[in-house]
Image 1 (cartoon, rainbow, N blue to C red):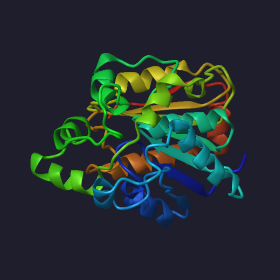
Image 2: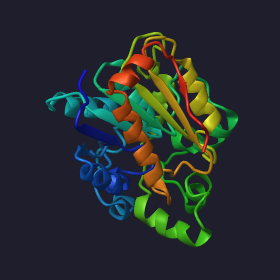
Image 3: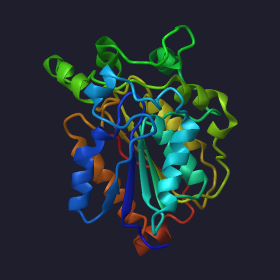
Image 4: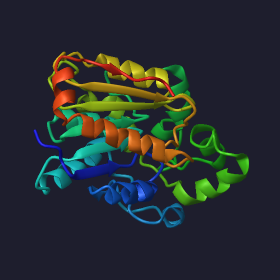
Amino acid sequence: MAKSTSIILIHGNFVNNKTWAEWKRRYEQKGYTVYTPANPGHDGKPADLRKKVHPDLRKTGFIDVVNNIAGLIDSLPEKPLVIGHSMAGMAAMKLLELDKVSAAVSIDGAPPKNIFPPFSTLKAVLPAFGFFTFKPYFLGSRAWYDRCFFNTLPKNERAKAFDSIAVPESFKVSRQLVMKSFSNIDFTKAHKPILFIGGGKDHIFPASLTTTIAKKYKDKNSNVGLKIFEDRSHFTCGEPGWEKVADYILEWYERQFTTASSDSHNSNSLQKAVRS
């Protein structure tokens, strides 16, 4: 299979596609055609969305996110590399299972329904399910973002980061991730290459969870990569040094389509990477 020149970057919960602006520019400079669609109910400037919630937000679920990207993929001339962050890491896994991609990358990705997360994850994301509130949607407080996203940023930079990325989120997305059979992954199926990126200081989906998910894939003829960046948080796509992560992903992807890599990884179920 030839290497695709198309890349789709999918944003996760609590942010929108504006977070991918620098990644899009960097990958386009390297010759790729890059798409950064907003998930349904997330289109607009974050500051505006905090003032007036998008009319489609409350009805948007995880299934809608996956279907939205699948529709975009079907309009393209080739299967793309799909990179998803957080909730969208799970979306990338689902699109891989549906054979919609040339390769997939999950960055600090959410687990599928058939992997139980650690207590620290439950504690961090429980408010996003809306089980104990009458509010129609979730909007994390400054303190929540500081704890769950910006824990590696200097304190004097956190308010600016919140203002630039924080958006309201649908309860339905999180609920479907844990309640719908669609959110299971069949780890026994043969699949295109997938890479898992984890952050050693991620306070939502810790590196141990990322490792657990990667090791669940069982097909010995399918390529699974794993890379842990020890000093990075859940905000790895936006915090200083994001270029190192972006470049590592592209280098991994391009290796999948070289003759030497293809020959040496034919029966490799998991490529372990040095933690850095």
